[in-house]
Length: 82
Image (cartoon, rainbow, N blue to C red; front, side):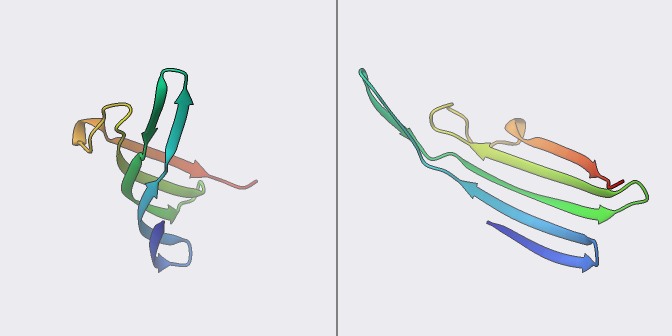
C-alpha cells in the first residue's frame, strides 16, 4: 500500500507498507513467514529526469531480522526519457 501527497505536477512525497506471506513445505516440516517492509520517500522532476529518494526498513522472522535502523536501506535513482 502506498500513500502519495502530491506537491506539484511531477513531485510527491510518499509512505508505503509491503506485506507478504510465505510458506514452504519440506520433508523436515513446514515453515512460514510474513515479511514486512515500511518506508518513505520523495520524488521530483529535475533537468536530468525524475529523481526519487526512498528510505526503507523491513523485518523477517525467517531471516531473524527485526525492524531496526541498522538494517535499513536507502534507494535513489533517476528515470529519464529520450
